[in-house]
Length: 315
Image 1 (tube, helix red, strand yellow):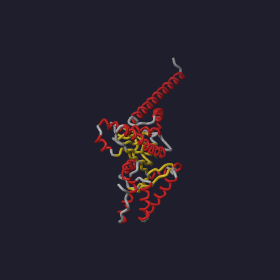
Image 2 (tube, one colour):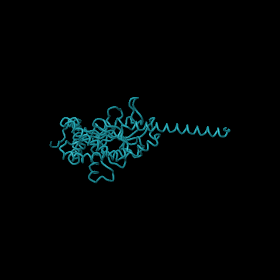
Image 3 (spheres, one colour):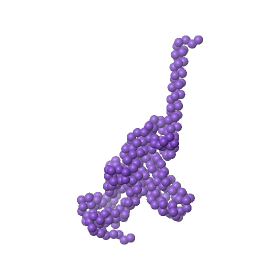
Image 4 (cartoon, helix red, strand yellow):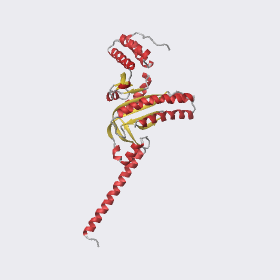
């Protein structure tokens, strides 16, 4: 027969076993949930492994967080899809996705989703990051450079050139599961996402490959930016100041610094209504720096408000 102390020890052992089983089941379920939520994303392998070991760090219930969001979209996709066979279009697009994905993974971003001919990328979720704005910006500049390498390969194979626009914003979002009982994804939602997506669309208007929000420019004081405009993007009431990245302050040459200063002076002249000074500055920038579409846009605006027609470059 068991004495009282043996019964107590037996009860403690049973309770310990039950607690261990319940804990294991909870962890197993959390890990399964992490796997399901990340199933539609590409997360760097070391991060995915960490989340599987410690799913509580992922914020499965949703939370507010500061992140950076990048949208990258093919420019002129419809026109290209009309001249290539479907299999060639798929090959052409796969080259784009491979190029963007390689850069994103190198800079520790998370590919949130692929949407037709565009990519949404997040830094700061699911893995927290103190350098998410800088990493996202460096990735955007690397994408532009590596697409040129891709286009050289496309040219050799007789395939159309691929151009892309990139929009980038940083700020608060809600991070966590989103969906229904039929499909749930781990993603980010909020104004920051909307701004990044809208900025990507504006790259066509201003003739630059990358547009970032004022929040990115403010977060990276050691990087130089060229102010483009202040606009109200679709879906929000507060204006956003748009910038094009120039490069890290300590890597920009003297000529570029001079052109950037001329750009700032011309923009200031335009704000105070000094159309002559602004026009002269923009004409020089158009001819000596570019991109031409950007400064033609400014000169056209000056012509409309001042009633004068600026000199144009030869077609």
